[in-house]
Image (tube, rainbow, N blue to C red; front, top):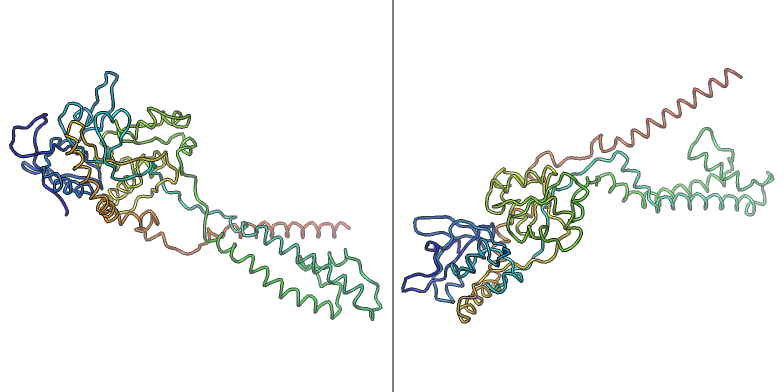
Amino acid sequence: MDHLKFEVFPFRAHFNVSEKFLRLAIVQLDPFINKKRGRGFVEVYGAFSQAAFAIQAITKHRLSIVSVEDAPHGIKLKNGTFLGIMGMFQRGEIDVFMGPALQNNDRFPIVESSTVSVSTYNLLTWSPRKMIDPFNFVLAFDADVWAVLIISFVSLVIFSWTVDRYLTPWRTEPKLPVTFYIWEFFTYFFPQCSGTQQARWFRMCQMGFWIGFSLLLMTSLSGALTSTMTIKGEEDSVKKYADILRFPEVQIFAEGQSWFTQIFTHPQNELYRKLSSRLRPVRGLFRDRAKARQAVVATEARRGVIVGSPTICKSFILKEKKASGRCPRVTISSGNAGLMSGSILISRKLPRALRSLINKGVLASTEAFLHQQYVKWTLRDVEECLRNPDVDDKRSTRGLSIPDLQGSFILLSIGLSVALGTFAIERILEQSG
């Protein structure tokens, strides 16, 4: 079912009608619930429309929209009254609230909740860009590579010294010390002239060593070298709430007068107390496309992050993709601020039997996975954006270029400069001698 049509009635606590009605309030939030106003009716879209249809079918009550304009969920004032949707429940103006909502101790005496989903308080943050590190190839020489070099070098020295001293009794030349073979093989790494040892057995040792050594070195080096040359470093980014403190200019965008702002206005630990000064509440952030886009653009520019569940964060990505035709360079943080239970709120003023039927309708929709499948289908394009923010950028797919390898050329230039300097010093010393 794509949408349902509901009648629209003004705010009031009682209706003088013969049919059975349930008064419904809606806060628009893609992809959970969306609405379009008609003449005398409202078309309701989104995942929660499945639950609304089930509630109508099971309770035998018609659902009527009594709140066309979006209102805040509402917070409790010092005098005990509530603002927004919770105030409408308290005054007996509505029976059911259709939209993601959270139950807490203040709301519990007024409404009961029918849980639709359990999620977490995540952050929509900028996606870190890949950075070209000109010396990244040096990381290929890890402990395994150095172990192969040192062990192979020492083994060859000891083997050559052992053959020279104990396994060649026919030789009349004097036996050479270990230090000779250390220097002999060292000169092969930095050759200046042909080696001193010219015996045939020695050349055979070299051939066997270089064949085995080359295979061993390339086996240990190739995997690390390939990964470090193709996988570049990432710039710093926000992966959890504590990371925000490292970025003084970053603001925290959250839906105004909602539980998302109370994380910071009523902090439970020192971290959220420090972050409270960064909070920027935005009323209508979830439903107003212009405000949502401003927040996403600021996030891409590393000036802010957005608080929301993973599904809500994905809805921001989907809106921006529809508006601009591209995937925004944002991602969802791995860290979160705890569990969040998304619920449909039901007035405790309703009879217990009717509340039980409403809960059965929500449960039927949830157990049939209608809500989850609707959300998954709506946000199907977002997964590709999260895997590859540059999926729509033709410049994103390219091979390695000179900047990727410029570190090698820098080291080569340094080596050539040192060699030329050494050569110049030798020529000067020769002429002066």
